[in-house]
Image (cartoon, rainbow, N blue to C red; front, side, top):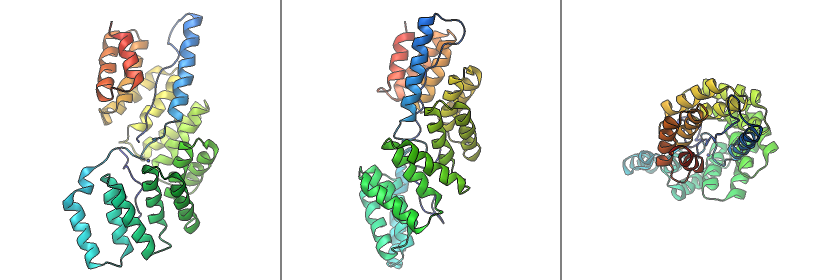
Length: 300
């Protein structure tokens, strides 16, 4: 999976993608049933496009990054070079990946104090502010990073995610577009632009972007879930099913992947397999309504 943080360039690398499901029924269906399913598809795609945790923002905390052993070794570097902003930026990244956000914030503050034009540290600090709920400060830091380096793709992607969270869809699209125009190799730019295309029912464009994200980050399950949703919207059930299965193969602990797979089973009339997949999704995330609702429909 993509790393949780967009950390600094040399030496270091925002809420994984949560793909929702449901679509129009395959085969023949009553007009009423078709309308209900069509409305459900529109609702679920709209929800998916509005998720606050797109690909690569906050996939999972890695406690090892914030372990005492790792931090101690980085602290030893700082003690030998107390005026080196790079050292604080690297340790701040480790704190952030370990979920130790206040400590990360202090290190990024110090890195910026030591080097006021350290655009990577501004972008890193912006992400920490986002996780702490300090959205205005996050925006200010992303803006500053871009002001210092107008070609820094990671800052555009981070700011784009911030805009998506705030419902500023066009601003988000423009930032993802800018990162792509800069020839970014960061899969998140394509994935997140794909989510926006998807929310606008431009599924062919969305599929193209998700496919590019997959080519750039083939081990990430999120774009497979995203592409599968758009395939379903285009009534391409076979390709959708293949994508949901691949998402599960890459990471079998994402509830949405199992629920998406379950829906295909349900559409095919295989309630037994659907119930098993819904049950697995509900086990992974008991609060995930598509899983619990699907299980209630199919368990009987």
